[in-house]
Image 1 (spheres, rainbow, N blue to C red):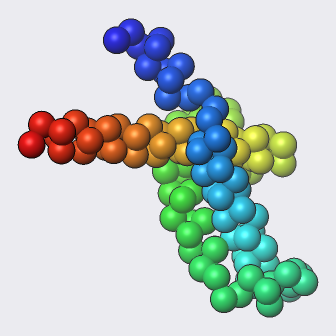
Image 2: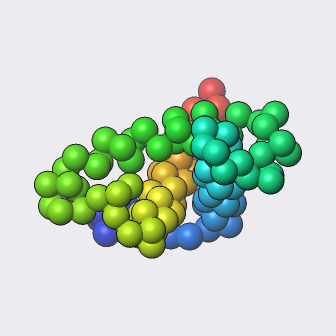
Length: 120
């Protein structure tokens, strides 16, 4: 299989990948709202979202993106200290790539299990 075909299949938008992206973005927005707990400007949605562990989940989801920050800073880019549009755009792009990779790995695992159970 050619690398171009693999990349095209991996990053092609599908309904499942877009749903997973939407879940990641909801976690991100909820995590940002919950982070207002640490500031003097409390969000009015904070009491509604307080029972859910969105902030912690958002922080864990962002760890790989944090590791990309130093190499990008060497190129003069800052994911978290730059313009808002760049921070939001890079976060959405990161979550889309993460959704595509997770969906691809899950699909590959499911098809592997199906092949193994057919051969038994």
